[in-house]
Amino acid sequence: MNIHTLKQLTVTLALVSLLGGCATSGNPKDPIEGFNRAVFAFNDGLDKVVIKPVAQGYEATLPQTARNGVANFFGNVADVFIGVNNVLQGKMPEAINDFGRVMVNTTLGILGFMDIASDLGVEKHEEDFGQTFGHWGVGSGAYVVLPVFGPRTVRDTVGLVADVNVDPVGNLSDVSSRNTLLVTRLVSDRTALLPADKVIEEAALDKYSYIRDGYLQRRRSQIYDGAPPRLDDEEE
Image (cartoon, rainbow, N blue to C red; front, side, top):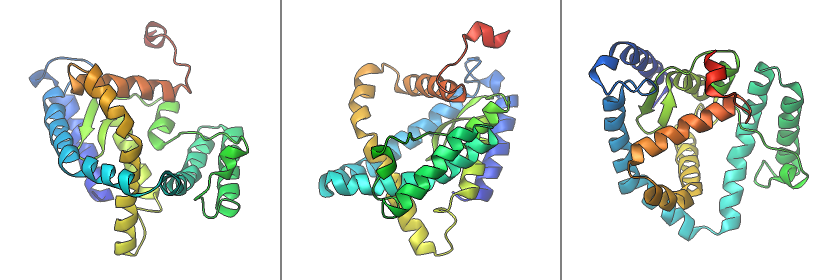
């Protein structure tokens, strides 16, 4: 999915969320639930048939040290734009921390394959453009499920467009290298989630609702840096 497709999808989802609520369950946080469940079913099927088996093969084939190295490499790339988002949110100490991680891991950690910064006690943060928009006061909008990308809100979908637009991996000029790295990152990320599969299957009577509620709760916590206000206080 390229940047132009994501932009078109953002506009479409915004319109659907504004105009299509009357045709669904009326859940205020998920007004386009019928659409979302259909996309969720597609994603779940794709995961079961293709992505999860590949991730399981990746886990079985590569030793833990090699898998950690791959995850660290992509984490080091991400730290650059985590730092940028902390700058945009006015969190300068955190941004300095992030850029310091990149410098240490890129040099001493051999292009980030070793996470030396974490070993030295330099904290890793998680920030993206969706969180930055939330920090600026942009409302979350409706919950949406994107093909392949999965759970988002309208705000996070717009943030995803920005994330994709600046992603150095997704914007490599060499198509073969770009696609190889994108697939490798996808498989690495999915492998990290394998332990959660059993928990979700055992805990969820309705897998869709379980993932939706978990996603929204986690994103709210991230927007408020782990200390969200009570819902009634936020509404006031």
